[in-house]
Amino acid sequence: MAHFEKGVGDERRIDGTTRVNSSAWNQVVSHLTRGLLFGHEVQKPQWYRPQRKNARSRRLHAAPALKREAVFTRLMNGWTPEQIALHLLISKDAVELHTQRICKQERVKNRRELAAKLGWKHEQPLNGREKLLALAREKEEQVLPLILEGLSWQEIASRTGLKLWNVHQALRRIYKKHGLAKRQGKRALGRKFGIELPRFGRGPDQRPRKCAVAAEQGIPGAARLPIPPTSTPSTPPSSTSSASIT
Image 1 (tube, one colour):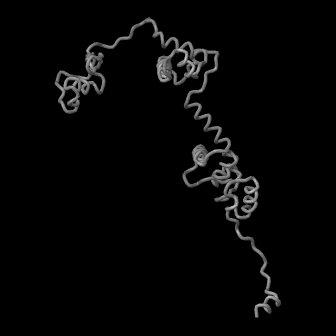
Image 2 (cartoon, helix red, strand yellow):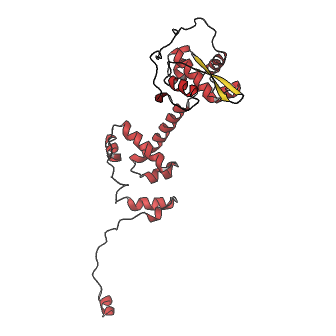
C-alpha cells in the first residue's frame, strides 16, 4: 500500500493505492507527473506486478463495525432504509452498502432471505426493485382482462388511467410471460384463453356501439372514430323526383 499527498495549497490529504487495483499504475504516474501523463503512456517496470506484498488475512473474533451493527439491528426490527438513514444521520447509499455487505456475509441475496435465515419476526419492507415489480404486476392485472375483451390501447388507458407507454410495456410483459413472439399480439393471447379476438379493435360489427359508448363516457377523440358504412337497400328513383329534374 502506497500513500500520496494530494491537494492544492495548504489543503492536502493522504490517498492510498494498491497494486491489486486496476487503476493503481495510473494513479502512481498521475501523482508523480502531477497529472501530465496517464498510466498507459508510461511503461511499467519489471518489478511492478499486480500482486499483494502481504497475504490477506481475516481478523477472527474481531468486534464488528459499530455503524454496520447499528444498521443490522434496525434491519432486524423492520426499518426502511430511509428511516435508518435519518436515525443514524448517514446517507441512504451508505445504508444500502451496509445492507449489501451484511447479506454477502450471510450468503443471501436480499433482506427477506436474511430475515428467513436468521428467524426475524418483524416483516421486512420491499426494496426499490421489489416495489417496481409489485407495481408492474398490478398494472398487468389491470391490463390483461381488458385486452381479452378486445379493447384497444387507448381504451385501456382511458379505463385504467395509465399512460399509453405503460399499457404498451404491460402488454409486452404479458406476451413474454405467455411465450408469444413479436407481432403475434392479442389474437394469439386470446387463443391461449379460448377467446377469438379481432386483429384491430372489436371488429366492424361492434365498432358503432363502441363509438357510442365512448362518446357517452366522454373519452377524448371518440367522436372522430371512423364508423363503417351500414348496408341500406337501394330504392329506385321516384317519378316525382325525375319529373322535377326534367
